[in-house]
Length: 168
Image 1 (cartoon, rainbow, N blue to C red):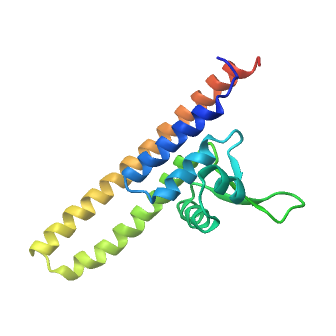
Image 2 (cartoon, rainbow, N blue to C red):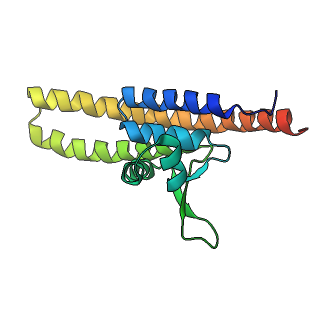
């Protein structure tokens, strides 16, 4: 595999990916920002770099970055000796975000149980709530299994990538 990076193509496809994220419910600027950091050479960009690449105002970039920070898809770091923040996307950003959702599922379940208890057993609302709770608990169990399988798969993928690029 060639180590040549086609910056123009990366930017073009990054923009397409960011727009795809927006089409699936993300705020548009957050999708574009995430895609830009994710595809950057080292997974790190300053607000000024993002603003320049995305041709967006600092305020738009700030809002997008805050969204990503809330989802834990990006982290904020300081460059040593600098006052500028750098926004970073880790290799396992998707996994970390999904595991955050996993803890949300547990909290949703606890809260739904309280509503369920108050809804009156056998009512239409109780039935809807019971089905919702059942779905959330089902997803919660599936996520745990997915997490275990992903950890194994990621180790395999890391080994494959290390082997492939160790000679370069």
